[in-house]
Structures are given as C-alpha cells and as structure tokens.
Image 1 (cartoon, helix red, strand yellow):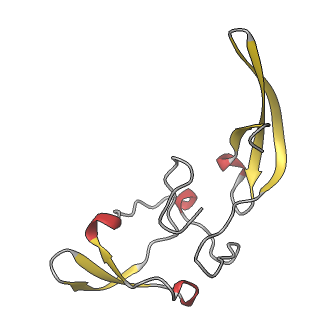
Image 2: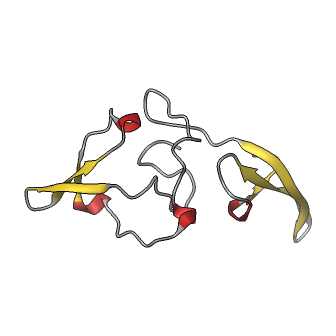
Length: 115
C-alpha cells in the first residue's frame, strides 16, 4: 500500500492528526510525526476526512515499517480458514488471511492463486 493510494477498496487511514493552522481558503497544515517527515505538511481539504472514533481505522505506526518512498507492504501472517467456492461449473479455493498488524476481525478472503 502506497501512502495516499489504496490497494484495496476498504478505506484505511493512518491516524487522525492535529490541525496546526489553516493555510488559505481550502488547505490545512497538519502536525505529522517524524516518521512521515518526507510528506508535505499542507493538505487540501478534499484529502481530509472527518474522524469518527473507531479503533479499526487506525494503524499502529510502531508496527508499520515505511520505506524511503513512504510505502509499505502488508504481509500475510497465518491462514485462518480454507473454503472452496463454487461458481456454476468451476470451483475456486479461497483462504482467509490475517495481515500483519491487523486484528483477526480484519482478516480477508483471498484467492489461492493471488497469494
């Protein structure tokens, strides 16, 4: 997952950041941690979201290791379940995978061929 681009269609946010001040009509300066020092501090209002308190939306930055280009790869840890899905005359093997740094509730079904 690259910073600012979603690989999957599930919305994920790093965490809520404090707004330091308003820059112009439609931009805000945010207080980012030192680990995100390569990211510009000013964001357009269209990139910001209202924060609804939900612990599943927040990534623990201590468990995520960002690369120099501020990207990281999610790694599957254990396989929780296996299932054969039938589609008319074809059958597909799917596995339920828990991702590193995510709770069990956030486990996803993935195709064996994609893994």
